[in-house]
Image (cartoon, rainbow, N blue to C red; front, top):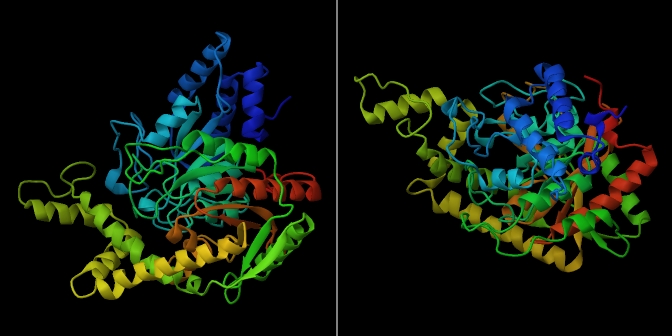
Amino acid sequence: MIDIIKLTAAETAAKIASGELTAVQVTEAHLARIEAVDEKVHAFLHVDREGALAQARAVDEKRAKGEKLGPLAGVPLALKDIFTTEGIPTTVGSKLLEGWIPPYDATLTKRLKAADVVILGKTNMDEFAMGSSTENSAYGPTGNPWDLTKIPGGSGGGSSAALASFQAPLAIGTDTGGSIRQPASVTGTVGVKPTYGAVSRYGMVAFSSSLDQGGPCARTVLDAALLHEVIAGHDPLDSTSVDAPVPPVVEAARNGSVAGMRVGVVKQFRGEGYQAGVIQRFDESVELLKGLGAEIVELDCPSFDLALSAYYLIAPSECSSNLARFDGLRYGLRTGDDGTHSAEEVTSLTREAGFGPEVKRRIMLGTYALSSGYYDAYYGSAQKVRTLIKQDFDKAFERVDVIVSPTTPTTAFAIGERADDPMAMYLADLCTIPTNLAGNAAMSLPCGLAPEDNLPVGLQIIAPVMKDDRLYKVGAAVEAAFVEKWGHPLIEEAPSL
């Protein structure tokens, strides 16, 4: 018998198209898996069982009529609970939007439905996407399927955990400072942050508008490419959307190669704070790339050392502005509206009750950075650093085709380990943040297990703006080499749930 939940998205779609499996069978298998294991993992905040089965039946009806099916028709997907979904809850991991049912779909949600992808439900996340561990969710943390006492990354830990526990073959995340790539790294999955503006942000609840970017999450590079092609493309409803053709990501994933490519290694992406096993696996990956025919080029990008500081001024400043709309008067939670409080008091009481500690911390930090007398010293200076980081990338990409680094300095840490130390938590995004500030594309894929704890390590690949296909070309080559070396995808080693 076919173990449906272990199939890749590409294999699943092919079996549905050929009639070997029905979309309903596939959806039921994943719903059964969710029912069996998600009580322990807590990847989902809402499972849309009836909606998913209805979508699956529609795919089967299309096939029965001989209608052409898309490359991912009937394949189940876990959707991060930051994208609006008509008729089912969108909470963004916050009590402030508990029970809110959006009246419309995000552009990304519409594109998934138009491609006949079956949306299983909405996944857990750090509140308003603020965090690196999914411990900041108002609905409790998610566990890492490799070790349920460890974090699955953040803010999109629910999506990464759903993949790693075989509850879905595809997922969607968002990446503001690494929230697709860092979860992929610590769960042994694949996550891609497309070029900024390549995937519409319309209907995605905003955290930091100049940094936020939705993207594909999967267990293989090809699956991520197939999903990337579905969700990317210009959207007139998004003023930051790039009006340009989607790069040939699927073709690149099917023809992976690094022969003759120049691959950069940045000296700033190693040193103090990096786990020995992470550096060991990264160095082995660099040697592997060299063996596959790549030329390795050493790079010096001094402004990258300032990226973390710049990010934690820019992102909180934009979040302070974006979250001002949650006032308790228009939608979501409303507290204190008993006739004895003014509108201002209702707003204050609602925010006190609805926002969690990390969200409050970032709002206060951002409001301070934007305040009179401090704007130029803090926010203005951070934007200048952002320009320097972009210039460092531009200079680097004059010499190399892609850059590689560890995705995150350590493997998954224990739930609660960094809860009282925000700075230690923020360091989880040390390698990922520069890419968000510059707006270019990046991918994380598994590159082995750290010998000291037997947990996944991620390799980050960074490409220039709108050269997202290079991620898939290099990623597919690396993935094939690792599969050949171990005989199976790394994710197969995750403990059974």
